Image 1 (cartoon, helix red, strand yellow):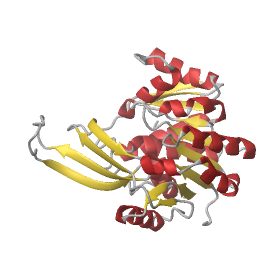
Image 2 (cartoon, rainbow, N blue to C red):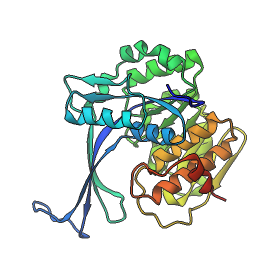
Image 3 (cartoon, one colour):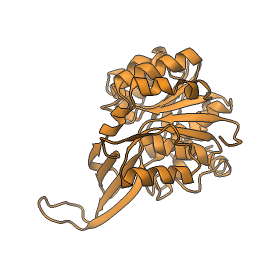
Length: 311
């Protein structure tokens, strides 16, 4: 551990990202198409962990990687960022998780594939063996890649030790895994599709999005945020609800903005600021990330965060 004031445990995916950008508006099947291919480290949990470290937080990452060249390189990258990976699991049977996405010119996903089987190695028993680490955390941040049984153990431990949880639903198809534990979640940060999966109705307009944030609070969430990328967000607590309007920026790359928002909201709550201030810190981090070519903006810091404070 370092000398930071807060210690956060982040649990979930750390992966090899392959991002493919077409150089042409259309892709021809069964032919080689010109494009740009970028390899980088990713995964929602890994990205949240790096953002938190850049905000001055001590971070331990509980993830699983394969005992292969990619897994070893990934752990080395995390160590170089001063992220504690002593609790990371190294699998002898499954390869390191990977994600591959084909993107439109505006950087939105066209089609994507993932191979996340190694994360099933984070079993209830494995989390139970880490119970003392969990007990001593100031907060847990989690993505939705854990199994249902692993979530059951994790939330039993966080409830037992009264540890606040900040959750990123990660993808619409995974959001349901968090639904049973909404009363145990301090803050949750779904995008529109993920929020629809959580509340069970379409978010077709602003009124519906407001209703969704309030519904999540009614189900037990402390702070519910529905993110809309550069179009801002909606949020609610038991005492207030509001909207931060579209951001006056020209987006360079939206990938990773939601992870940065989750990390900055978690940081704000650790600092004891109001929910609205925590949300605005999250928006500032997302804005800075959308102006950056990197998935995790290398210039993110507390100073830059407050410099991007949305008015």
